[in-house]
Image (cartoon, rainbow, N blue to C red; front, side, top):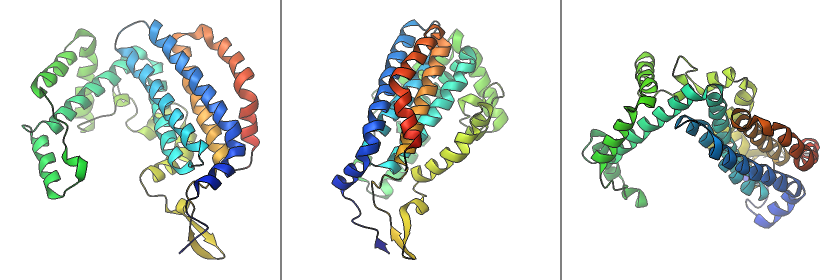
Amino acid sequence: MEPTDKLLDRDISAALAEPIAAVGSPTLQEVVDYAIRVFERCNQTAKGSDENIGLLFSFYGLIEMLDGAEVLLAKGAVGPATVCLRAGLEALLSQEWVARNVSSHGMAYMVSEVHRRISEIDRYDPKTHMGKQLREALEEKEMGDLDRIPELLHPEQSRESLHGLLMKPHYVAAEAEWQRTKKKLKRSKPPFFALWDGPTSLELLAKELKRAGEYYVLYGSWSRTAHAGDLHRLLRGVEGKPAVQRLRNNEGLATLYSLAITLGLAGIDAALSTYRSGELEGRGRWYFEKVQDAYLKLAKAPD
């Protein structure tokens, strides 16, 4: 197979991306900056306790992924940018699910996070079965820095503290439901959204949130890239012969900017609707003044 051209030319890629990036990057940055301000205000005024973490920090994770996507898209690195957007879509789904019932879904998120952290401690603790398995696996093949297993100073205390958290009054109901769901689904780590008979997979979660279209059209293709299984994207035909696609090839650049902005707007709306609904009118004015024109340009721009 022959390359379609020089496989990586950063200067040419940046020059080709510039006409779209000149519109897309400032607009996506504007959305990210506005989202950060929304997060800060919601975080300051949210009433309650740990249940708010599930919504607020899913939103914050979405913001982080959009910021990363902007950096990549500005350089024409559309393939890697889709990995960020895939994670961003997952964060949005989590955020919107928690927003449906912050008190229960938020605590489900927290209980699942506590169990994840306990499993992580068990994985790195040399005294546990999981810890011994990890060390045996690393001994099979030298993996450079992977040999440096994170050292836990006080794993017993950390584990005890996390179990103690699950016994606190505002965690008890969600912990009982996590255990029930674990048994019902026969899964050691049920997804947090499955608690209280919720969706048992990301696909079903997307359907429940009326985002099945995004899941089937976007998440599937983005997942192939994330899992290094997107051969079709990396190969192109040239004069009837297979050829290797150039890196940073800008294909779909305008569309990805548009999708990133769409995800950001959805996350902003979910946060404001839950915590600061009085600001939705102002959010509308901001959109018309700062985002709409560029957003429409991107929608009409050729990829």
